[in-house]
Amino acid sequence: MPEAEGEEKKEETLEVKNLKPCKAKNLKVIDHLDTFYATFDGSNMWKMEKVSYGIWQMCDGTRTIEQLVTALAARIGHNHEDVRPVVEEILEELGKMKFIEWIE
Image 1 (cartoon, rainbow, N blue to C red):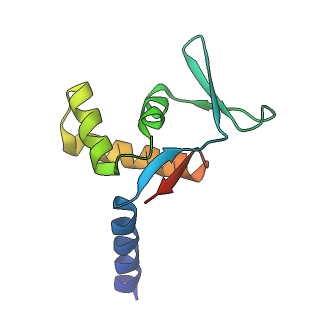
Image 2 (image 1 turned 180 degrees about the vertical axis):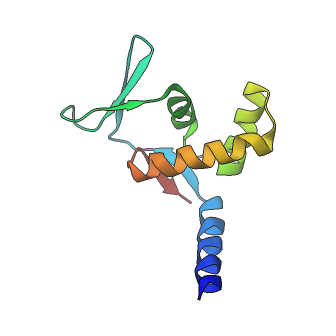
């Protein structure tokens, strides 16, 4: 049974790889003294780390995860393989929070 679960997760990851993250249309991000706060309606706010905010800004719905990783690695001068897990983790968290949407 564990193999089937692993296969399902692998299949799910492959599907997401082809999708493109896009900023949620109704999310507002406020920059207050270089600290970022996200809100949907002004009643609840979440603090965003600077790295998360930078990746969120890149989510314009035109690039895949791989393209985002490549662009970010080039921008900060780090190894592509070192950047990928960080970007994937942040995108996963942004998705859970509904700060991004996945489009084809």
